[in-house]
Every structure is written in structure tokens, then in C-alpha cells.
Image (cartoon, helix red, strand yellow):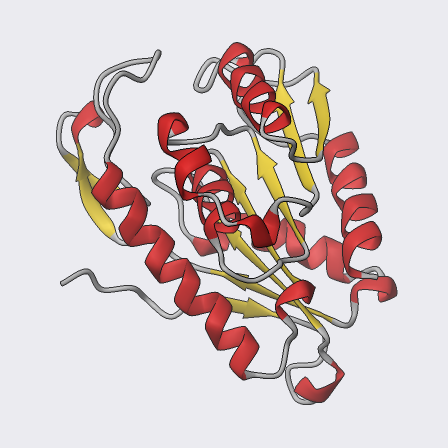
Length: 227
């Protein structure tokens, strides 16, 4: 039985949740935790335009990661071998999808319309954001896929739910990324566009990280889909 720590929740209205009308569920990358993106979210929340958004930063469970010699670390799914990816942890990916679905449903139960819920993630967390959002049975606000790729390429057309075929996708990648190469992200972008998804593509002079211009572009996207 996988155990999940309660996610970190950040908003300007923790004492008055009735002022919250939108939610962002933001997944961290391999080996990190929900606190990884806390500084960026705190910065975003300095803008009064986002005072109506609750940010949920979940923590991946600890598991042995094959590529890292079985070392136990926070991970949304196992990773085998090197890039290009020839084998994927379908069971692990779907377990994380199920967990994120429970977080989406929690927000709906708090009164948030699913069309006001956005999934975001960096690296492995971004893969889960894309995987989950495109299969979710109700329309979501959008997806922010940062330095990441679409997992389980071959299953997308079969498993995707028509509810999110028009959901806007923000994809951002560093041209010097040596963890997930730019070419891998471009292949995922091309797949999404072939499947008629609306992808806003951004690339930056950075490695496997975030940069100042990217944060500005993220705020612009959040304004566009959750204002």
C-alpha cells in the first residue's frame, strides 16, 4: 500500500476558503518533494491577480528507482534504463494518475469547478500532469508541462478522454537540458499537436531547471486560463 504525505497547500486565503475559486495542483520532479516549488508559488502569490487560487503541492511516495541503482527516493514512477526510453513503468504512472485524480476530486468537493483546476508539473511531475489531465473525464482549465515529456506515447490516442481535447497545454523546455533532451520534449509536443491538442511551446536558454522568463510566461498562462 503506497502512502502519501498530505500535500502542501498555499493560498492567500487559508482562513477564508470561500474566496478561492481556482486550484493548481503542481507536481515536483524526481527526488524532490512538494516544497521544491514553494518559493516560486509564493512569488506567484505576491501578485494580487492570483489571490483566488489555491496551490496544492503534493509529495511523491518513496520508491526504489531502477535507473538510480535502486536508490529509494521520492518518485511518481520508476525509471528504467537510459534515454531514449524503451520501457516505462505503466503501473507506477497509473498509480500516480489515480492519486492525482483524488486530489482533483478533493478540490471539486471543496466547491471548485473542474474547469477551474489546472495540473502542473516539472520533469517527472510534468509527465504525470500531462498523463492525468488528458485522461480525466471532466474538462480541466489547463496543463503546465515544464521540462518534461508525454509518457506512454502508444496509449495516448486510445486512453485520452475527449473532455480535455481542447484544454490548453503550456510546454516549456531548456535547450541545454541534459536530463530530458529537447528532442524528447519536441517529439511529445509533435504527438500532442498531431492529436489536435492546443500546445503553447516555449524554449529557453537553460538546462533542466526554470528561468526568470519562464516564470513570467507561467504567470501569463495562469492569467489566461484562471483569471
